[in-house]
Image (cartoon, rainbow, N blue to C red; front, side):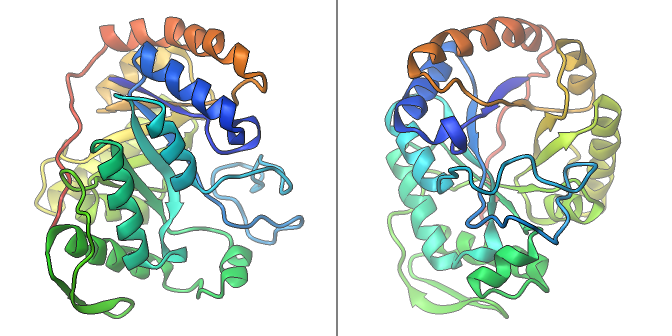
Length: 302
C-alpha cells in the first residue's frame, strides 16, 4: 500500500515556501502522491450541505486561502522528481472540458507523467450559481466531460458530439505522457457506479473507519463485475476521518491501494521537514509490511 498526503493548497499549504518544503520532503521520504482539492468560491452562510461531515458543514473557513489545485500542484511538481500529484478533487462540471484537457495534459507533460486527475461532481449549489453553471445534471455533465477529455488526449484531430460538449476535428496538444488517470471522488453509491463504469480509480474521502471502507470497496467490486471489469481494476485511494496505524491491515484486506493522510502543514517552512519525517516514520513501515503489491493501473482512454 502506498501513502499519500493531502496537505497543499489551503491555509498554510497555500504559501509558496510551504508548498516547496512539503513537496521536497514528501518526495525524499517516499510518499506516493501529493493531493490538493478545489473550491472556486466559498460562502459565509452556506445553505448546501457538505456531504463529508456529520454536521453538514465544511471545516475550512470561508475566508481561508484556497489555491487553484492545478497551479498549486504545478509548483509541487516543479520542486520534485518522483512523487505523483493529484487533484483531490477538482469539481469537473465547473470547468470547460477542452480547456481542462489542455491544462491537465500540459501539467502531466511538464511533470513527467505524474498527474492523476481526481474529479467530483460538486455539492455546493451556491458555488455553481456564482459560476453561472447549472447545478442540475452535474453528474451526467461530469461523465460526458471525462469522455470528451479522453478523446482530446487520445485523438489528433479529435471529434466529439455530446449533450454538454462538442467539437469537430480539433487538435489539443501536447498529449499526456501516457494518458491521465481519472479518479472519481464521492462516497455514495452513485459515485462508486461512476468509478466502476468510467473511472480509473476512486478517492474515498473522510470515511468513518475500516468497516466503512470495506463496505464501500465491496460495493465497488460488485459494481465493477456488473460493468464487466475486474473488481480490482480501479485504483482505490482513501482518506479516513481518524486514521490509525492499526487500521493498515484492514485497509489492505479491503483492497486499498493508497492511504491518504489529510493534514495541515506547519506555517513555518523550516518546520516542514521534521513534520514530514515524523509522518513517514509513523506510517511507512506499517504500510510496507501490509503492502498488497498493487500498482497504479493504466488509465482508460476509451
